[in-house]
Length: 64
Length: 133
Image 1 (cartoon, rainbow over the protein chains, first blue to last red):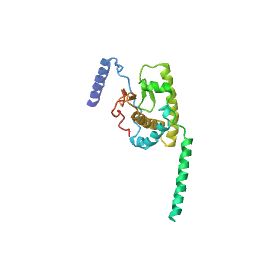
Image 2: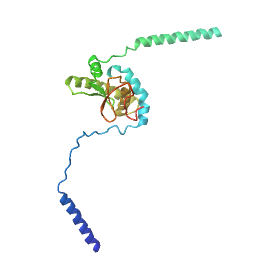
Image 3: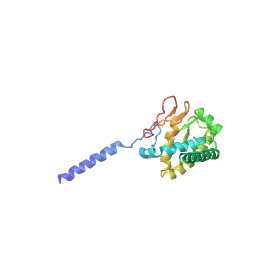
Image 4: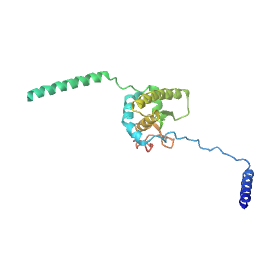
């Protein structure tokens, strides 16, 4: 019984907080957002490909 | 017996030498960089990105964009082919090639550091992703 009252008061308090907050301001960061797309490339894969990639660069010297 | 072996060895060597000579003739001299690309590269207008592609370092111009797009389209085709052959993704293969391409830059050329900034290659080793071999 008491429990219901407490919950009600808490809800009111929370609503009050949100209401007082009014609008939420979001500032754009000054630094450009860099999305790191390479994080899921594993080191073991890179090590496996290293020799082949080295040869590819040598064999295609005109575009590297 | 010793004589026989000797002649066999000689024959094998002769075949090997002939094969090397033919191979040498069949392999074209390594293609050179296009003069415009070579000039932009040594002038530090373009640099090696971390992801295995070429990037524009200075203010973009249509001429630089043309050079960079041309190289990157060709690189992507090569990466795609080798990625398939090595059972990797294009991104994985390209990133690995990027590690190597940054390592291969010479003094004065530009490359992208792990923090994304453009760096000028000096005498010391380039700043590379910790996963690079």
